[in-house]
Image (cartoon, rainbow, N blue to C red):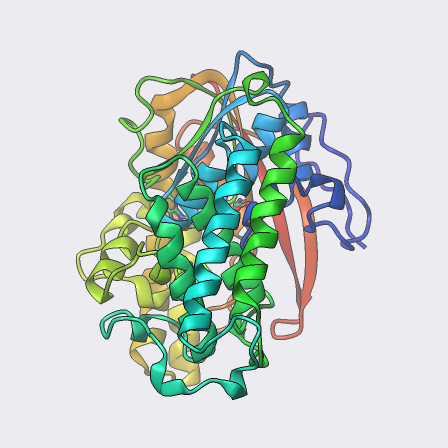
Length: 442
Ligand SMILES: C[S@@+](CC[C@H](N)C(=O)[O-])C[C@H]1O[C@@H](n2cnc3c(N)ncnc32)[C@H](O)[C@@H]1O
């Protein structure tokens, strides 16, 4: 059971008293959201609650600076409110951007998709690899794979060789439409089918490898996704909905990214200091669709992300200087280091935990400072963040620290809402997922 927590006056959204289903996308919210939704997404109803609480109207622009696959922008658009998303993961930015562009004709989409499907099916048949054949019937020697520099980037066994071959054939047929309006929808439908229906990936919430699929009809799975898009598009008149976009931007550096647009509210969920590599979640589709070409390319993208795991920390990083004066952050870093010594842990990763923690909060401080230049006076902010104990079980109350950093930068504290709570058997403590609500006085 979770209590609703209010730290000061304000009309808070009402939450269920249990966690059941709190983070799930409601069935009635699937339209557009479900074109591609990664495991890190929060639900549409959460966005709706804060749009209502912040009294957003068609005159306002809502910002999600850590946009993921676009829940905030899709939901804002559905509610008739303009929005901008910022995202540093190239595939996620692509996905969010396609999800808010509804200016495509469903019948054209369907027609072109059928033509792609029949061309791909014919090619596979001629190669002796019909889409319907069982994997055991296929000779592996004839299979196409990824280039040498790309193959090691995907998680081992994340896709069967036959499914990979068939996916690459389908993708090459899709790419014949490069430069045409329909192309990006087909690519997103491909990504969705690839990750959730074709690959061996499972999410729970970490990305891992599940039982290998012995056979999957790749083209049919893709067509189902395209048809889902067509169904959603047929329900709406695209001219009746406001503008929304998602830009590829490092949100620690956003002052010039919005071309002068002023923001009335921020609704977002940044990464947490939890050792999660946010590029792994989208690795397979990023590689196949060409968003990550090789290791150097992956590294250059990782450098634009907030530091939230030790594999994504670089020598020249210096975001920690933004929290040198925040006692709570310094004290957590010291506690982690003391624990490391006490436990006799000596690996390079473990030695890096204190620095990572400072870099994470420093990056968030840098973001919150830079954000001020694009906010309207009176702008309201909702940041969904989770407590963490990933670093030698030292408790990091992320929401409370973030609130303190915000207040230090001149934001007004409104309250912290409790979104979800889970019990950590490792720390024998409750970990909160909270919504830190702040106001920018201007
Ligand atoms: C928890 S997810 C957001 C999920 C999102 N609320 C949704 O519903 O899909 C955090 C996102 O922040 C992105 N991110 C991390 N560092 C960033 C940065 N410096 N600038 C922009 N986006 C960043 C990650 O790539 C990830 O997609």
